[in-house]
Amino acid sequence: MEEFRSLRLDREGPVATVTMLRRHSHEEIAEVFTRLRADDSVRVVVLTGSDGEFHVPGPAADYLLPGGGHKLTDPHHAWRTFSAIIRGHQAMAEMEKPVIARVNGPAYGFGQSLAFACDLIVAQDDAVFMDHHMGGPIPGRTKFFSNVPGDGGCALIPLFLTPCKAKEYLMLAKPYTAVELERMGIINYAVPAAQLDAKVQEMVQGLLARGSFALAWTKRLANRHVVEQLNRVLDAGVGYEMVAFLQREKLGGKDPTTLD
Image (cartoon, rainbow, N blue to C red; front, top):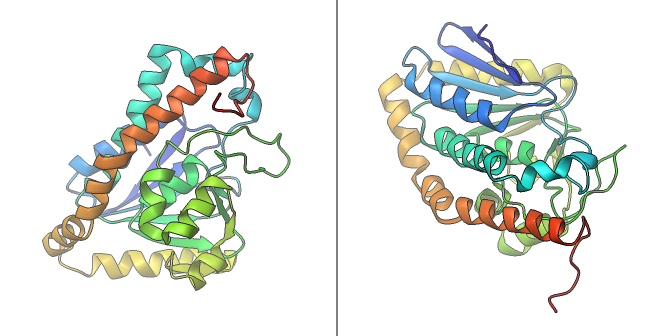
């Protein structure tokens, strides 16, 4: 096991498992996938969460102004966060080894973006996917304000859903269960919790049985449109999200509701 502050990296032969802890760091997500891409001893990566969550953002107080939200308009913090979001997505899309999302619970915001950034998605059947940025309610937490789904949602979701469904998902923060997404053909499998590890291992072993070079090149070809989409949209989404945080700071933490 290798040391990170906000995630755990475990290796078992050619398989690396990245486990996100509750308060993971965008910078460390970028770092771990950049490192794994360069490690030719790793052939398959599994990304999962902990404590019954794939990834759920922190409480609204971390974002609202006044309070913790001031860090999001600090130039140095913003640079580290938003450049890490871009680097992390690019590393996942461009690395020459498949990444399997083992979705062990709710995936909201950046969490659902990370799930959709993976090549294969296996989810616990009751896991909920939601891009909460535009005010989607997170159970047991204060309702979030409106913001641009800039950490991957606007770039990736249009690759998975039809235009109308993608806009409903992003603009109205519509949640979907894993079962619904499997029925729509959006994710690979939605299985009971007791079967999650077995299904992930089945896919891992299937990938390891393929030729390593052919598998690597197949991913590069299959993901070319993903890389192009990220290059077209992701940095703009990140930029607009930053502008939205600046607007909220200017308005004393309030959400602008008019274009006047």
